[in-house]
Image (tube, rainbow, N blue to C red):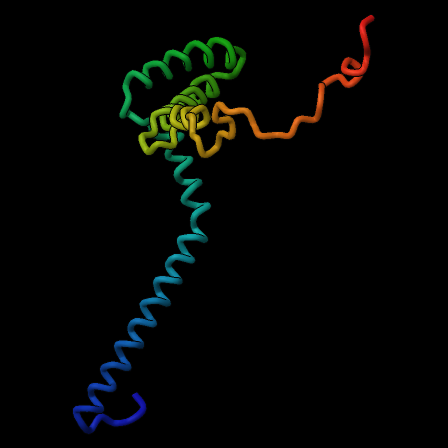
Length: 151
């Protein structure tokens, strides 16, 4: 406030100035908040990874059953056959939890949907539409065969 308010017009001007100052401060706060979120994104990714290791996705029990069977058969019997007790106890749990989160994600970014998107026929990315390309002929493939007479 640079001057004293003496009339109603002065009050209206001060109100407009303060509202403009409030909007600029809100914009500054929103910009700072988005910068803080951007700077903390590696930390949130680490916590997300740790959460996937320690908690199981229970949305698909059939998938979890298959992961349990594969974990028991392959991990404990083959890969960790000669490992110590702690490794044989903890590593399969972490791998089962993480794989249940990766395979059972419902957001559309699980392993199955990524594989489906790879093999999905999308005309935007396919150049061959069943038509031969319009390329000028360069002649026969073997020029010697075209000039040679009968043998």
